[in-house]
Image (cartoon, rainbow, N blue to C red; front, side, top):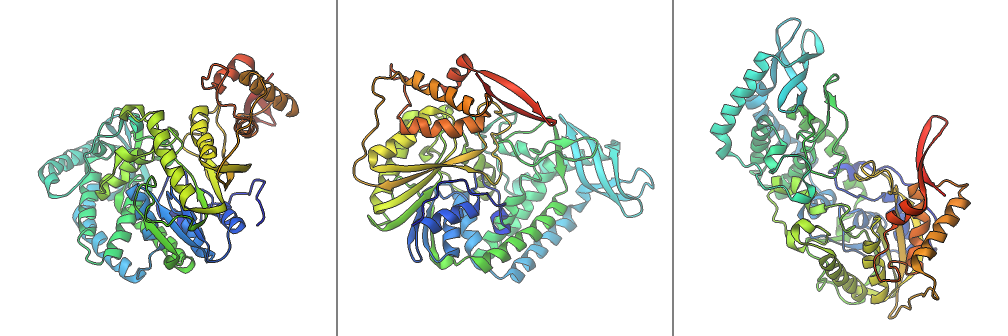
Length: 527
């Protein structure tokens, strides 16, 4: 077994990992290298917080057996429909039938008039400012693609659609759940408010027709494709009013409607998405052996379906406290798929649901105990972690050590894609994860500080790292250095047993500076 002790350059996601979005997906080549380093062929690998399934999928490619567990229904739905085998021609046949039926019925919802020749044109994209239908990108058969301001005819069409919606809304399903407060950012309080009435009618009817497909695998794969395009046709995409297009995708980890947002043509979007979905599905079927993988939609607080000391290796990415609200964000998909979600069992710090540190800690410790039970003696656990709340570090790392996992090394690992929280907090964030590698044993001894005040000890370490880095250090580089130091020296609390506030320590003792070099702006800490 060869230990990994340095960053692995992260590859971009393969097509089969892009079948559906999921928050916090790890670089597949990095996960692959860890599995390869800590296991051999036919070994059994566990991921108790499976997410989008990178661990079980990579295992199947290398002739390892895998168990993936996740309480989030959309997680297991994504993985099951990534790894299963289907007839792509039959999938396309069902897609085409449903697509053509709904396009024939609702294509007129995207009719407009060309501003040049006055003939009929198709709305490809549009931009709303506040509640006003503002600008439109149209495709005219004679004049090509044009941009125009929404006119009286366009607003009249919306009024007609609104009448149709109120008349027909009981004939199809659309989600009306209240958005969890933790992921609510704008004044939109319920799921249906994230879509226009035009979108709700079309999506509701497409989803209804998909639900009528008798072949379960075909039905579920088409549902996954449908779910994967929802954010693109929602009101959550920031809009460019001049170019009449989205400024970005769904990059903010909240459910919200920007003041200026887009509304895309669902038929164009669905057709494009289906083509990409089929490419990813074809790739997946060529690479993945689904017989090597078992997937469970359960809580990892109870892994009674796994025998004690049967697992050869665990690689997992546990919930980061309050960093990403997986269940809250997944409400966007679960609500359309009508999945039953056990929100009360989610492992998260969310004070709005009375889920505080004690609940987070209790549930996570239950999982850690189960991980320790099922893992074979002297085998390894690799855990990725991305959080700057020192109390969360203590809950995760300290409790793992108490339960019987000995920390062997810590590796700073770059991400394949930036997270939704980067850019929201430029100051004290970092652009990668830490991979903590543990070995199972019965008892772990804790290191002591020999009387040195913890805050002073940490302050000196920060000073040392700034000096070593020529007097200027970026937040991600600083955290790369101090997190292992805090963990290895048990520096979670000060002499009064209060959690050390790292941000406060930095602000009181160091200066934050903007550095411009070669026209590139960088922010960091100086002495």
